[in-house]
Length: 330
Image (cartoon, rainbow, N blue to C red):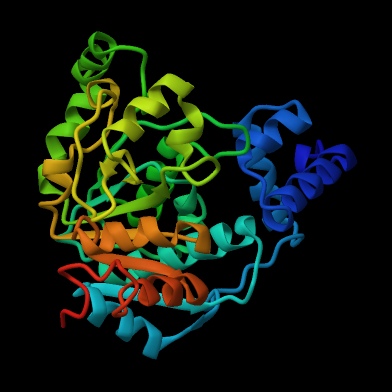
């Protein structure tokens, strides 16, 4: 009987390399594919091989210590529907992103029911969401935005499909960028059948998963992807934060910008009407942006770490100069 490819020494070693990069070095499948000069589909098969051979053992548990008291305080201060604050220590941004992505997976698995429609928007902080999912209700999964292509980033459509595979419900995803060069191109993309089908589902979304960016270098994937003239035009519109492509001023009020017609995102008017918008945010440098998103009510749920939660709460204390209309609401 011929040996299978799994038994080949070269394949075993390659599976071990891929598993190490993915699980220990927090590299995406796309990045691993580039480093090993193979397709990302083969990377996925190698990771399956690593599990089958016992190289990788997965234990399911809380990705950190949930701080119930701080979670309740944050929810009370901003009138949030949900708040999950974890004590992760002073980890690096990449580690926080990975661990909070897993926490987001546990949170959405806990909150979602078969009657929900779950939307997932572009955000690097959501890249690890599917890794912690072992079960999920068979509800529809809707892609809420296009994606930004950056080295090391996971593909948004892959994430939508991964969550769908666990739950077994219908999937509404598409290949499209988040930002294009002109409004005519954006309109053409929105008319594509896959994109149009997903857009038609947006008003039915009951739980949206998003990320929060500060309008500064290195703190927003959108900011970093734009030319300097585009950045300046958005800044001139009074933008200081963004929620998966929805631009906000310092108080959290959505602002129109010259970029809006060129973006494949859930419009602000629709995003703010969704019953639950659950954001994942990490890094204390985003403190004011997170405060703005919570204060303006664009986001009514947050998954974050303790140091950022405390920084956001500090901005709502009297004398901070930022205590807005939602601060202190119960």
